[in-house]
Length: 201
Ligand code: FES
Image (cartoon, rainbow, N blue to C red; front, side, top):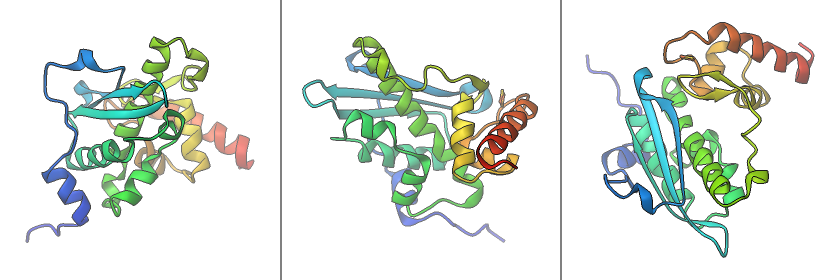
């Protein structure tokens, strides 16, 4: 029997008609470029932004990916959400915000929605770096725990604060360990440390 189609109408629409994909050849026109994931691990996402320097808002947000249907739909939605948004506001967008805007994703596809917002933060960081505003970069001091998916200790801490208590939950929220899998032991140790730090468990 065919699997039940569990995607929302919005997910289907954004997957079938993705908005703001960057066609080849004009990356140099952008003010900030961010990348996350690793094509060797199966998923890679790049986000390109143009910024209105007077208002510090995002004027344009384009993207490219080797991700799945859920990653495509999530990033398409994200690229529409951030237009006209202040950089610091866009920096705070989480996978949860994107999921809400899409009316949800199937449980086992939630982790695919984190690529876009991470690549967006990397693009904003890139813009700050190019414009002498390094002091506004908050992801700089974090330590990469998962090389394949570029998940940092800060991402793990954020996931713990959002409710992750098992490696599976952490993976759903961050995509950690979905490439080569070699980071799993370290990821669990970092997660346990944050659970102990914040909740004493
Ligand atoms: S380092 Fe490869 S999946 Fe984390």
